[in-house]
Length: 136
Ligand SMILES: [Cu+2]
Image (cartoon, rainbow, N blue to C red):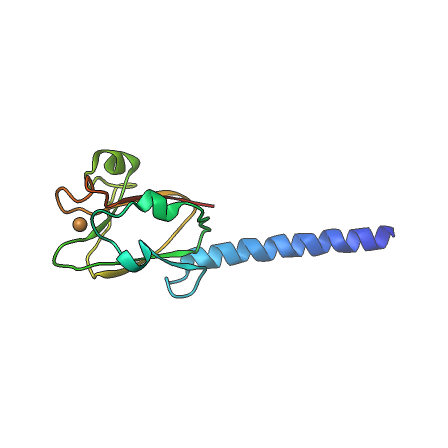
């Protein structure tokens, strides 16, 4: 009994260690490798007049999950901004930089924490092109 208990405890430790390693790998891995892929806005994609808070409802994001922003590059982009940038709809740096994506088909692998994305084209964030994602 005691030996069995010890065995499962070390088994649990191995499982936790494996998960930690996996989490580290997921963070380092390129977008294609890890987690669940979410198409932002589903069929509508990344555009004006979509309620992205509604799109987020009921979804749980884990580190390593991938957001794909699909949009027409003539009209939109995607900026990964600070909380203040999100709130005020300005492309303001997150951690000293504000990555801006412009391919029209941008994959972002999510680290833990809360992350904010807006369209940097004037007026678009105010028209709803903003997304705040909490990642566990
Ligand atoms: Cu836009």
